Image (cartoon, rainbow, N blue to C red):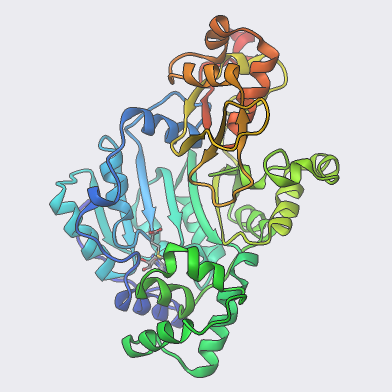
Length: 422
Ligand SMILES: C[S@@+](CC[C@H](N)C(=O)[O-])C[C@H]1O[C@@H](n2cnc3c(N)ncnc32)[C@H](O)[C@@H]1O
């Protein structure tokens, strides 16, 4: 395929408004140096990422990856991190594609193709993909169902989707300020954005937007401010709405990219009288309830498959004996804190990617030894042979997984039907 532009024609006025918005305010703010923002990944980082999306598949790097609505740099990041993959980035914004093209030239990313093309017209690429990445885009589409369905249609049967959409409750302040700006006729022009930034300094400290203004990198610059508060098309999805959105597009929920914030075993809810009720609910009902209890989620990042994907072995499961053959792989972001420890703990594990400070996992000396023995090669059984008690190990590796400190390569676990035919 050539690296040339294809005219965009979504047909809808709001789609034109959205693409005009991103021509004026490309997002994220363009950079000309990828390494300053993120180091290229090593093999272990890639394996962890791969098995987050495909726990039951043997590791591969020659993936076909679509970055849909790639903005100014996301497709270049993927091409840099996955040098043996073929990456295609599409976006309606010619300027965003042009910024990414400059990164492609600078880093000689021969494995990256770029097209100015709407998500809704992705079928025109005439290709299917093993991995579709679509973050921060679907909630800006005039018809999110049609956009996601189009992505489903170019997904290989065994492919995986990574999607991020806005979540409603943590963004209540954003929607209030969007309404405020509409009422005042504030436009996404440089003078209006400058005045808005100045006026927000007078926002009451207890306004629902205030924590986001203080803590979210999205508000650190004018492009982020415009993207959040002056966007012509922006909706959000609660957990039940997101699961419905996936279902209507022919997709099935697999897991959260970071799952601990949604699980009743992790964080403050685990020690409340409601814990027992929560764990009696279905997984979907747990996620929905916990989103309401946390109250401040601003986005959901989800892994999804095609509903009709062929069965690929059993999911991660700590009942039975299969877990002994799982190979744990450390996820990035784990930090062992050694101050102000609870009794008996030698460290507290936190994941720096989490935004909630109740998601810490105290560990003792024996567990620290198990953690140190994870090398991405040995199975849990192999680690336990040297390190003792299996029932303690089962509980600990399940905790590490729930708290987003490891993923598992379970591709070597035989399913029952495999075992019967072997
Ligand atoms: C908030 S940015 C997210 C960029 C990138 N995915 C990321 O996470 O950094 C949204 C991007 O979606 C693009 N976009 C909006 N509507 C689109 C459509 N219908 N088809 C393709 N891209 C679209 C915009 O031009 C913009 O670059």
